[in-house]
Amino acid sequence: MMRAPRTLIPFLLLAPAVAHAQITAKSGIVIDAGSGKVLWEKDPDTQRYPASTTKIMTGLLLLEHCVPTDIIIAPKDVTKVKESSMNLKPFEQVNAKDMLYALMLRSANDGCYAVATHIAGSVAGFSKLMNDRAKQIGCKNTHFNNPNGLNDPLHKTTARDLALIGREAMKYDAFQEVVRTQSRTISRSINGKDTKMVNRNKWLAKDATADGIKTGYTRPAGLCYVGSATRNGFRVITSILKSDNWQVDHRQMLDWAYAKFEKKVDVKAGDIVGKIAIDGGTAAEVEVSAQRAIYAVGRRGQDDVVQSFSIAEVPAPITQGDVLGELVLRDRDGFEQRVPVIAQQSVAMSPIAAVANTANTNGVAVALGSLMFLGAYVARGRTRRSVYGTKTNA
Image (cartoon, rainbow, N blue to C red):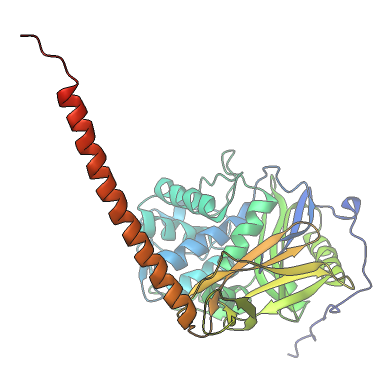
């Protein structure tokens, strides 16, 4: 049977305006994945139920605590976990790599339970790991109470925090590979009839630039989504909570972001970014390069990103690879990024500076010697005055 052709969403629309009233989600945010800069937001810090978007954190911890070949064994009570399932059997074995596909594509609640007990011994222990990791990422209004997002009054987060978690997870190539996959056949030890994991993120088939991340739904949470798309090397992440139609919301937010913003500065690790003056060197200046990659986004058609250096006084000698300061990227909104810059060449001290330095060093030594002598003389004087000026009783 022939498959229907994919419907591709246009890369750019004509700068649609995204008004809060147009977005049905109660909370939403769009951020630049590279820098974390917020491009648009609507009530992003109100705590809400995240449903299965929770599994982004569970998948992140799975990546950070396991190697792909680790074997995860389903607990004996795994069948008690309800709703979305990969139909794990008690003591069934699945490797960590395949389990990540089950979590992110099938949205396996039972798989999350198996991961939690494998890594932390219990749901409570794993929830603590989730909350600790969320704080490390910068989440301020998140409290996870389970690994799968099944409704719990104590299990809440925000659109902003979910975007930050999604951004962190997408730093891993292995995670990116999983969440952009539409289907995957896994290996498992017992239930060999249920091996095909199909991604519930239907947006992947509608937008050629989509590359993740996770859908979610419960009645209390409504429709939830954390999405990612990359166009012209520029990735944005959307986070949507309690939506009436997450696909429509996501499309409007995504198209607006790409119509309004573009890459303005794109620096690769090792790129020469300028020259820095050297005081007292055999060369007057030295080329510097970025220690790591960095890019900035700005509004289309506007020159709104300023580059500058933040540098302390740089005296010779300089050794190749020395960190000499920072490249600063700042936009008109006041959003700032910094990256260390390193010397591309060594610069020796000039002969004149070396002589002056030696003279200064010798002068300091002579001055210190004189001060030491004078100090000893004064001390002796003080001793004499102390001895002879003291009246003794006969």
